[in-house]
Length: 104
Picture (cartoon, rainbow, N blue to C red):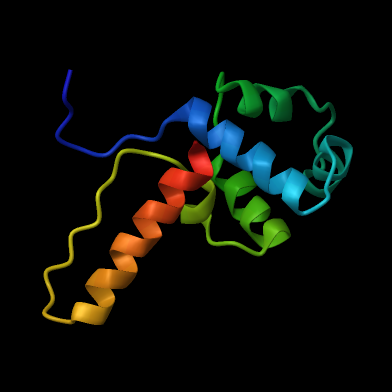
């Protein structure tokens, strides 16, 4: 089924969050404490793609990781540049290719 609107891939987003966590040298326990979660189960559910973090948790994770929320999420959205700025278009294409490489 082809959707006309962008959707977030829960599994790939969870893998992305786990990868970023490891790159930053963080542990599940440290994220649990930062987010003040009573148990780490929800974090493991993110990693497995069973659930996505809440908006508040995504916002907090972006602060912890020092990345924009968009860098945490993986979906099927395609950026379309309707401007005539060639540099901006090249940057968008570069960004998309990096995101594809991160996920694979």
